[in-house]
Length: 314
Image (cartoon, rainbow, N blue to C red):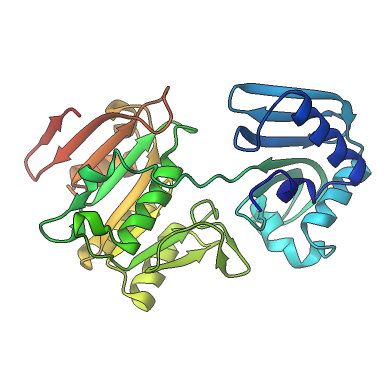
């Protein structure tokens, strides 16, 4: 479908009409739209590529927030309880709805989310070819494999979009480069890479890709290695001690890895003890920093060897 109706179908008719009218009035195209923020007793806010639009007439009542949630859950909130407790629900098309409210804890775990107060519709847009500029640093043509790579950027700089496109190309193969496709395993802890909906990836992640989602990266990596024998493992936003242990296990098992992490520069990266340990152990062969101001652009790249960090510019 790939139009605003993919999203508006989850809203009551009056609210959907209001949003659609505002988008038309402001000349905002579907490709420009990034988020629709719905908050109880507050106006709807549309976030787009150039800023945001506040719909003053779009004050959403508490019961309307719950009505929207019912539509999202196909009128069965109970069956979506696990996703709600994770803080988001994935929709057809790969769109995600973030959820906040009153958290109910039981034995240290989130058991429920009561009194839902906010919904954030994040509009999914897969950008085919987003990895074009970064591909040459990661592909090892001589051995038809990839270099163990960490892609680093602040939030919102496009690292997940690039990772998704990298996976697609590595998995399906790159005919013009005579690069044969590899078996890829994705640990999609938050559902942002493949955007699985009832077992079906909503994004194009290649023909040789297996996905395990809604599980911690540290657990999912080991499950994939034992069950699916991937040649490459990919995961988004690593950074914990458990992630480090799982990545070390994967690399020592002969699996290549492509991961992302938050950070602005090398100094930021080394402030994270777990990531510093990975870098010092020479697990990664490439570090690629994305530009914080221009989405998808490369700021700098590092080639790592067993002796030192060797730096080269684009």
